[in-house]
Length: 202
Image (cartoon, rainbow, N blue to C red; front, side, top):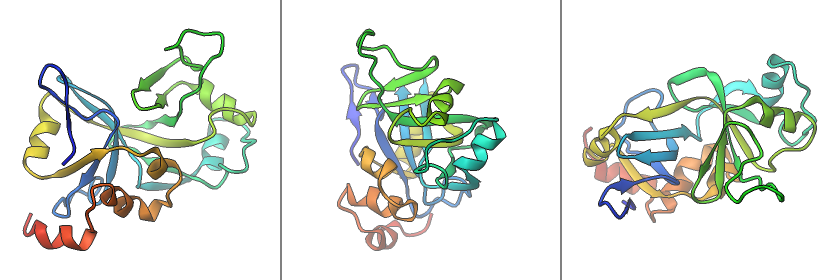
């Protein structure tokens, strides 16, 4: 397990992956890799990065009445980011820097800046930027997100529901979806077959 402890002695898993242990039977979270966008003593928020829906980016843009002038994204899947607010879109992307803006100013109106170089945007303006052929180079769009209340994620980790490892953006944006679970495990030096053998009964 690779969890960071901040100065207050609290576990901080922001910009980490949560990798579901084999014993997890939940339909949404079984064999999932969750990218943690925010984690504090109040709880955690993340996006599942390896559970594609049957909606493509092209179809999503049709639904929101925008063209999509990014051929590289047209057939990319929209992901099932989690069970909360599944009717809303969440865009995980590379940081966009405004040259004339403040150091922490985002290009979009509703953006969470994540330490580690990524951002998560929930406002329509990022979709409008993509529709013109611009916008962030690397994006992952999800419907819904995952959330844990105060102490809940820490409890689940103690109960061996999750492995944790510092996130690698290449797994999110550059790794084929079917390989993301095993690739995330490889960041820990773990092979799936060894994990399964060691996990035993859930």
